[in-house]
Length: 531
Image (cartoon, rainbow, N blue to C red; front, side, top):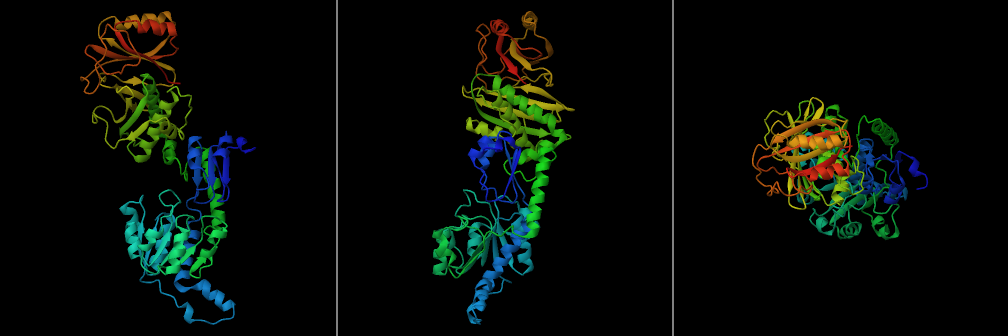
């Protein structure tokens, strides 16, 4: 904690605990890399909140862990450790160590990622029937891995051997417990080379004693080294134990060391984000064609935060198309959602400075619900090759919808609520402010606004005016034109009103804003800061 504030990266193995207290002091930290697979020794949520990537090496120890699991399966089938001990004690007791053949038996795999699939390949070659459960794998993935899809209940009911290859999460904690082990075939043999805590160790001991579980092999435990309360389990004759050897081969040690070094170099050079476990969408951010969409998303978020003083409660994002970059993929939508939330949270006056990693968790803590819709935005098939739609619902019940598109490499705002007629407002990097207002659609209305800005020495970079194409279906009634303007009103259109966006090079002073707010023919006057 004394030195970590000076470092940009941290590499750990399984023994080092990267806690929230350490992360608070890691002011420059960008990435924590785990030379291995499991990241349960790292506070991933706190890392994300601090904008720190958590990375593992998913492929470096795949083979070594899979081969250990198979070795333990063979040890259980043929009683190899006990037979070895017996011979070393000077005995020649062949009858006591009669085993079973693995060919023709059913192996149930819980967790069919890289390691699970490697185990499946070897087990199939040994003549075993392989069934598996993995909630994030698609049917095609199971076919490619030659694993038959099964439910957990199927695995408990049908398997002669069960091996687990999942991370330790709230969902997998004590997954194999008194109740689930009782559902298994009598005499089932179980292997855990994943994480301690996936199997309820006290329940496993009782099942070994009763014979419901015929044998078990554990490479991992809830406490390592095992504490005294685990001694009865470890001493059971039908349990095979190893001291967390999954990645303990010469080759695996070299692989994970090399992999984590290369992956972290790629992160610092912004080439790739392979192995990042807490921010899945980062790899999409390296695509050149996604850059203008990222700018568009963040600026729409900033605009939504400042178009009303009423707090944002919900955000709904929809995307369509993209000629050079497909913005409808799951990763692209997640990336654009994060950029919208980054712009939104940054400009909500909460004193928060989110980045691409921390923005979603900061929005969640601010009680903002964010939804990525599978639907396309309305009016798809119009003149736009791509479309990004962001609708927010506010505490006062109003809704505002902003749609944007990228023309070439330049992001534009193309619609606000139902104002879309000839509205393609260019979002360029230069201007720092936007002045947005609704005005009576009559000659001379905007010229009075220009006079006020001229007196305030505010330069206008560009300006777009739009009329409402359709009457508002859901928006509340707008205030009458004779009432004072208020920045808390929604941007829903009213009859005879137009919407104007001005890109400004200069800030609008308080006096100038007051002058604009006093104009009876203006409504919803808002100054939006983009930079």
